[in-house]
Image (cartoon, rainbow, N blue to C red; front, side):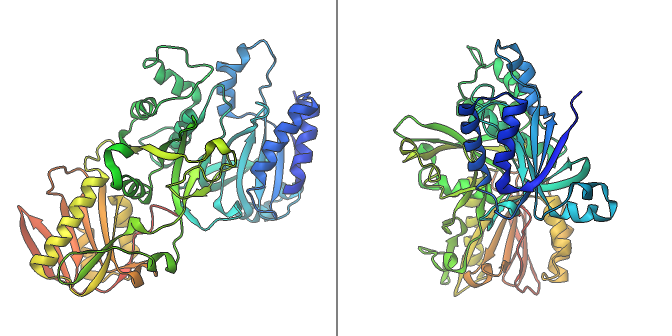
Length: 491
């Protein structure tokens, strides 16, 4: 039985350490070693230079072992079963510190995540969860989940988004994207469970007329089918069908904290799947640049939040986690010429199965309610409005309301006492100056389980609390000052 070996070293020494490991433990020759270390260094260069790394070998990784026993073990050439694991820390530690209970809290506080190094040379980057704080450029907000792990036998945790690279045989970009999404939802919500590559293949077997291994990739329809079989109410959007609204709808789902699968293509034969999990933080200048408002009457000029021009955060299995790009140019971080000109042709949204009102319907309904109240009730005049519509769980929304002491006691209690479905669409109203401070001055709550355009649960606008009962507007005067926005979808 081979004992676990551990080393603790600066991040710039990891390449040399693993080069020796590949040569001694895996009997790897020079050419594949150089290629593998090149892939590793490209990954590590994305991380901060001041990070320290704990290297552990051998490590049994559940995802790689699944691929090993379902595929690699049947090959004539010998493939190794064991991986190595890299654990990242924000400061230098000693190996003996992991055995000193007095410094365990400091170790846990400095922990920044892990990456599995698998013996699928040269594509050695396996599954990982890295804290955004480990990334050099980390001014962004993402869907994230807290994952319990160990480092040198010490239990700790990291908050981030699951990532893995494809090995081009058992998992390509599509399977990797499905796995990452299920890992995220399975660790965050009890309705879902993490899955393994072999399970994804088994789900797709009934829909395929040829073998699935070695993998040649999946179509958008196959990705959608797999996610549906794994418990989601899937919605597919095509750029051809939705035109100018396509990117705005995509941004709405990302703002809702839902990792979205994008299918990108260009005219040079590239077809690829990515996950989009968040966006960069917007600046005051980004807000000031908003233009082309729509006049809703009473000199109320309404801007779409989705028109704020920022980078979005991509999980791409050909690159390190948390890559940045504009949605209009999703392959900008590729240096190869044949990747130029890629566009998002469709995207797939893994929704909770009981969400019946989609993003387009919610946005249209919120705008119609706002315009009706402005023209009929004169609740607003001579102001600008930034309208932001997103999906949230009523549980999370109410939980944040309980702690939102910037909202007056009466309007807050009126919202908290409302019965709500499991998921709601929230339409926040703000101004250019308020949104820079993460404040809003109005909100509509919509029923995400409703489809007949009677989905308004309640609203706060002007100095009124509004709700509708059988198309009759119920209007209550309430004192309303600007209050903090909902901030729980992206962190």
